[in-house]
Image (tube, rainbow, N blue to C red; front, side, top):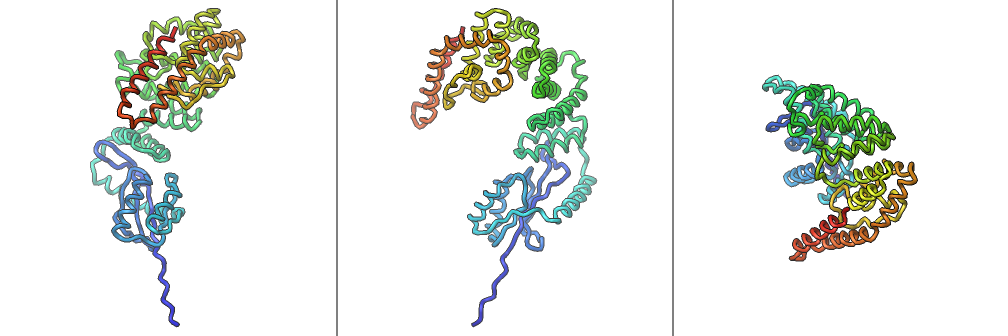
Length: 423
């Protein structure tokens, strides 16, 4: 009996290549990624597509368009990348009835990199060369459009390679290292910004923060302050915070909410008290901040002003209902309620307790005054929790035609309740 010949399964590959040179798009620049769809002999099956980064949703859409036009292969080999979610590619394969395999990029990639680099060099020779500072600034501006941490870092590294004086790129790199927990490295990069932009301090009439060119320096000082804090150097962190407040008295970054806590951690109680003596005149009508209020309460307690301490603790407990229970070892309020802002949330209380909770362990009297203030405020806090729980419940009822009016009424009542409860 004659058997039909078995045809070899068709195997295509989805390849990607990082282009090492910035590509201009309008006034910005980005490091492009080229996607290619090739056959078994690495022959192109479709025109390459240029993307600012590996975006799986956009890549799947592009491959789907090619499948619509060419038909789907039996096997699609997808070059591995940190940005890909392998399980999502499997779902894509099921939709198109093709088997998806994640594979390591073969040696072809190295060859394509060199070819693209040569092509980019030749194109650069033909095209007018923009100033290096413009290329670096464009790369930094494009950063906000990128989601991949790998791509963001590569973009910043290219920016400082193109223009080593680009302080905006250096401060972004410093922040990247900070969030990765590399505090010493972050300090080094932030110090480079302070060196590059240090001349701004000597200029008169600087519009700090309003003038965007001043922002890298302010962010660098703020970043150094946070690094020193995380490295356990509270006194150095306090010095940097005070330096930032002297440089930018309007305090656009919020150093004033940290400085007194760093002073207390460093055991500089008199300096912390001095800070609070001038605080209200420097920042009249300032926004409520639970961290600041608890620090103020502790400073007053250490001065022997128990009544003043209770008043500030009351402010702090109304600004964040979770901090006092954590410091006192009490059962915290429920978390599945409405929170007006990030500083009101349980995570903020956890960060505060982890970093500064030990301050209350040093002084038995400070903990006693805090407990008394908390016990006095319990009925008010219970009512506040009930009001925020009602707001959370209403958020699930947006189908109600009167939702907006009801929400506004409850929100206004909650805000008025907090103002009335303030000392």
